[in-house]
Length: 278
Image (cartoon, rainbow, N blue to C red; front, side, top):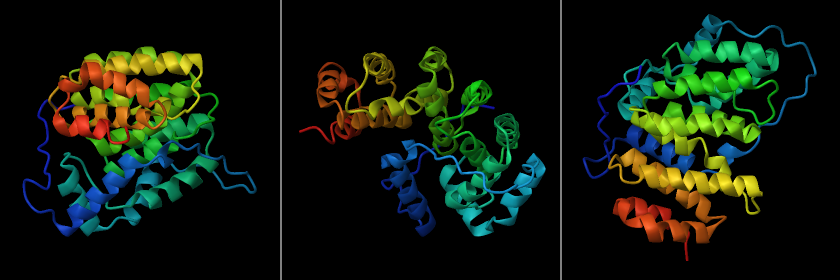
């Protein structure tokens, strides 16, 4: 599904943003800057029989029923990825998914998530990722296999980042999966290469990393060095994002990285990476 043609990125320097584009851009900025996306999801207590989970067709119908044509058009114009948009907000998708997760076994969640992902509908793909976004998920081999299989199909930051948010928890649960993620660095799809950094963001968060976590940080800093020479804006932004988040908890490591590799970054990315350094 990955396309070789890179979508044009419209930024403020190209033309003024419309009101809808400005709203979407603000949401994107808030999402990218947030630590909340890497908080653990709490399991809902089972207090009643909620019935069976929806079929993929029923889940899509529920999303369609909440869609708004104007929002869908705005999202399509903003994301510029050739897929169907329904115009359903992420908080509303999360409300639906919360119920579906409570209704389904882990195996049923994985099956529903994979079907929704392959529907090619933007909001259904977001819901797919949300279905698997949970810190404690047992067994989780099926969830990881699904997320890893999606990575070569990434086409834009929005859906990919939701999938990486789910996948990051599976990496924390089993760090040996980093070997597979490292292979993404050689993928011809720019979004897949970028995902290698986004999915490992949880490893930037600790103030007191274990020896294993420290080794993983060092490993991913090497990935940052591998990707830094690429000129694509989204790759540059991802490297800067990873370094910026790490700098909140390990400023010396980021200073050392910038001293050696900083000149390989574009000026905006170098500035973003050093945002919290003093």
